[in-house]
Length: 149
Image 1 (spheres, rainbow, N blue to C red):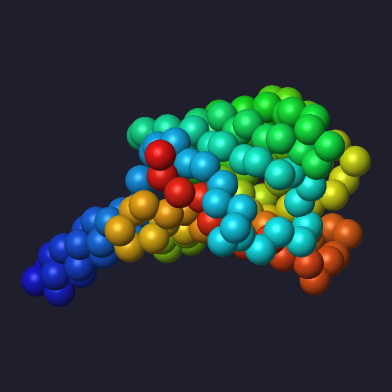
Image 2 (cartoon, rainbow, N blue to C red):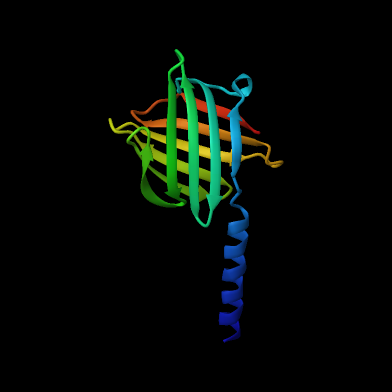
């Protein structure tokens, strides 16, 4: 019986410790193009407004594409890996935490699959977003640095 109680307590502390590794990405984030390495994406400006609460994430993303075309993308999803619709593109996305990193797997209407990895800096002033194209496979990877506004 004593071992069972110790195991239960260990599991509870482990779950609490895992929750502490999830950063709060809430805030307004602006692309710092001079510090970013953009090889895959076609935008020249990016602003993300992120709100996280109770296992949900809402992202309003404003992009200016090369040539000046503007695009607004809206995510309103859970962070438990369930699929959700992406307003503005018709894509499907799913978000989940892998330790301190938020992962978004997104499937575009035409079938392309992108992986976004978002990681907060230790001082919570920068958000690094790594974008990879998995289908079709590409070795080009974007490393975006966004500053908190």
